[in-house]
Image (cartoon, rainbow, N blue to C red):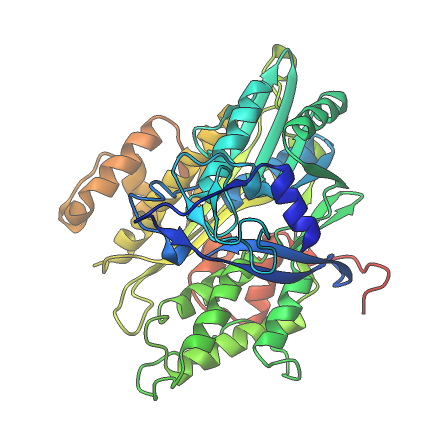
Amino acid sequence: MAAELHALHRNGTWSLVPPVPNSNVIDCKWVYRLKTDQHGNLTRHKARLVAKDFLQQSGIDYHETFNPVVKPATIRTVLSLAVSNNWSLKQLDVQNAFLHGDLHETVYMRQPPGFEDSKHPHHVCKLHKSLYGLKQSPRAWFTKLSNVLQHLGFHGSKTDPSLFILNHMGTHVYLLVYVDDIIITGNDPNTVNRIIASLGQQVSLTDMGRLNYFLGIEVLHTPSGLILSQRKYIQELIDRAGLKDSKPVATPTNAKADTITKDDPLMPDPTRYRHCVGALQYATLSRPDIAYAVNRVCQFMHEPHESHWTAVKRIIRYLKGTSQLGLRFTSNTTSTLHAFADSHWRERLVPITAYSDSDWAGCPVDRRSTGGYAIFLGSNLVSWSACKQKTVSRSSTESEYKAIADTVAELIWLKSLLQELGVKLNKPTLWCDNLGATYLSANPVFHARTKHVEVDFHFVREQVSQGNPKVQFIKTDDQIADIFTKPLSTQRFEFLRSMLQVVTRPQLAGEC
């Protein structure tokens, strides 16, 4: 606590002033936490002074609060780029990140409990810097960091504001920001080290060395690339759900019988259900094989029944038996990503491949279809989705075409991101297992069966005519996105899971 308070004073976080009449004064409290590493070992005890933001008043002591957070697809894309080019990945941790932000509003706070000034016990703190707990703190910190990076030569990405790019004289450096966790990579190690040193002069940060653990995700480096694993996070989830002694299952959903109904009793306390489902959503960052199952249980957060809780427990039991799996990124020499746009690499274009699928009227409750896609950069899976469509489709062609439209939208975003990173791309190929939807995307045919999807029709047709992307037919047996749209048999599920590059992570020393 004394160390935290010393850091606050050193940073000039506040000054003591007499109470101002009719002003809003917020309270604060101490929050304690045990910091652990990726193996669960205790690293340090941490105390943090946190403001009680629920006492803030809009328009008086805070205004804008929105703060961008890096998208998971952006993280995976940059990791794939770094692995394919054999670039080093480094992690930075900003110490007391929110304390670096400058406040533009007048905020008064009571003195920290247990550390009141003996000479001025009734004075209040007038905040000059942001503090943990304030509604505007994340935004103030991000603004501060953005200004520092711009002075170092970076510019923010238009497709993802939390990605910062430096391209100068053949040097390429990419920096990802997730609140106070920073990942940096580039083609010139000397430039990367220089940037880290310059950034350390502006904000207090720790160079964590090679990227090994961030956002609860373990990064395991292998001879062929790296593997993203959430083994520790999954084990903690199993313990919180009370399923430590449960029996594992082979798949996250039951392919023979749909256990999700609304005919059974409501859960008396849905809080546990919501906590577990929220945790499962985070587990999909490195586990695309549970995306469909998690999407199903997310549809009943407002009113979960006992059968919904049974479905959640099945997903957790599946994770219990497969906690050693992770998402692999390989440096594929046949499709190496090159971020250099000169003529030497002109013929080495990056292949980008998408798979789109839909399960027509698959939901027995409302008969809406579930659409899904998987997008690969080279051989690495960088983006995927499993989502129930918002309207009821009148034909399988319509549902498949809506899935294609969603996939094309993601491809456009991903292409813009890669262009900002300086990556040259082949024209994307989108594989669909519905002949009607495939023909409809390429031919100017518009008949009665498709007039109710006019917007999607024109959107996809325009993109296909420009070569973004080329839609081709694929057999259902080879459709990788099938895993995102419906329950599957164990054999089929395991085959498609391997196609997603979900593999067994290597065993590390000291692990059980």
